[in-house]
Image 1 (cartoon, one colour):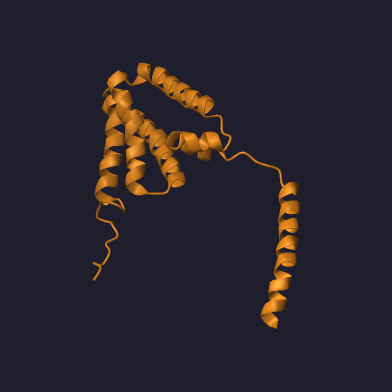
Image 2 (tube, rainbow, N blue to C red; image 1 turned 45 degrees about the vertical axis):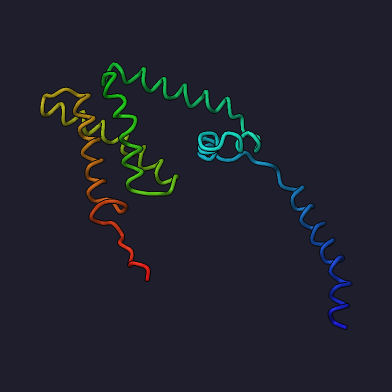
Length: 163
């Protein structure tokens, strides 16, 4: 008897739940995803980003323009060969320290901003070339992350063998 009653009530309950959900959804406005998500989506899954309504081509061109501006501005200070090291080293350092993308961005920005400033001060006090000193400071931070980082270094979390 209870089973028959619950079966007869099920369509009405589902209809009420559907009406409630659709009315809640209609009151909400669609918000575009945050810019960090847009960058990740267009970089790693351009077809999925396009299907979700993101302007993939525009974001790709914006990303390429930002990289071009970074290279043009830093050629005068650092030199063409050292630019590659300055673009790659902060991201590689951040990848050694964390596996979450949001914290990886923050760490890469911090390394990319702080290391050149420290390198400029060190090159001033040691009277050495500024570009090479900036890259050496970034490389030292990378080597410290490699030696002491939680994923590869002495602070690595060791897991017990399964068995």
